[in-house]
Length: 312
Image (tube, rainbow, N blue to C red; front, side, top):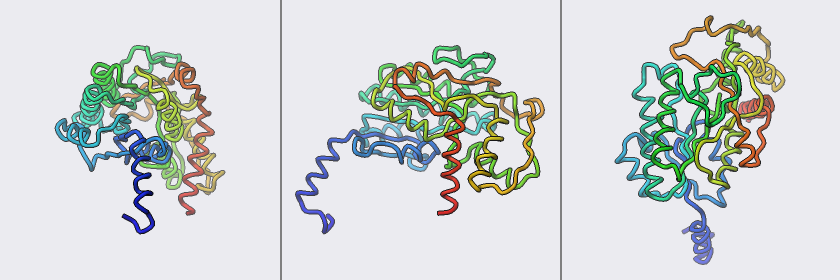
């Protein structure tokens, strides 16, 4: 016991801890996990964390032992294998993280009356539709990454239909980890020009805005499937142009380079990607009374955070 805490203070603190719900954040070291650690309500939740260094969630005996020991009433699964192109040859690794792990989490949640939030992706759709995808639209993933994420969704929906929500989002980025924004900034500092695909359309989503949505979700704890992203639509080319403009404005980049629009055919990749994967958020907005902000505004906030981190 600290010299600054009297026995009565200690008892009060213990009582306060007992009043908080145990919330387990799986994937706490990822970019969404790191954001959630800064935004979850610590007065309401005792936030527990698991990373891949702590436990392999695809090892059933290991993850069940951890869950039994921690006994959370809420689980947020932000862990995922997200290397879209590598997944084409590392399908076992992708399936372990994206499908097998969620299966074990869902089975435990249903058996122990806990509530599971499973984060998923727009890549469960094939992109051949030309209107925003609703949660009820037919899934048809074009690549291994999307297929394994869909397998995870199916496990969660089947095993814990009354104890889970699947939250699909798209084009996730932040100042943490590896993502399109940080890759573009690095290339813009080292290249004379860039070509970026302009015929794949979706919506960038800041982890800070996803976290804001998740905090609203925690108040309601719905079940089923919901969609969330920032507002508006963009191509990867539009996104890259905006990154450069915002970075120059924030002082992260000194020199503007040409960013040219190219086609998917011009830039073949191992994994096929949906040409159109905009998510319809209308049902989520109505259910949660939570309005998304435009992706350009969210990008500006992340660029400023990146600038602040470099000057601090």
